[in-house]
Length: 127
Image 1 (tube, rainbow, N blue to C red):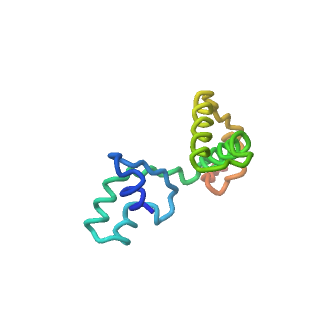
Image 2 (cartoon, helix red, strand yellow):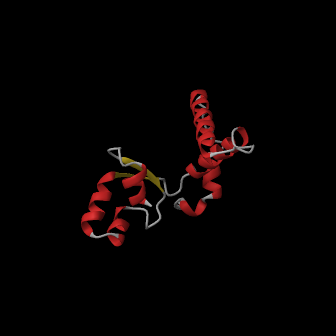
Image 3 (cartoon, one colour):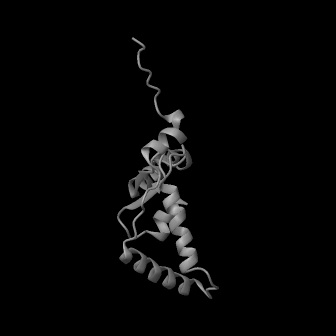
């Protein structure tokens, strides 16, 4: 897929930015496991790898945005790919123009309760 993106879909761009999770196969090293070294190196130079936080809520934001896209734009039959691309581009422009923000409801106190296994246990001396 990365070779296809590099050589076909985005052949004219200088750098392709990838946002990936921390799965062990999501990195330049997998290119070297798949391709001969010269080709792996060529492809690795084309991509800029950005990793999501290991314990972040970024996926919730993405899922919410896709849900809004589905409700506001994709909630009807769209005849062909060209129309779909035009409709999604118009929706995206309007959505970005609205500059909607995420208002976090999950506090640090909530995190310390729900994710207590991730926080260190601090015990006060009984002196």
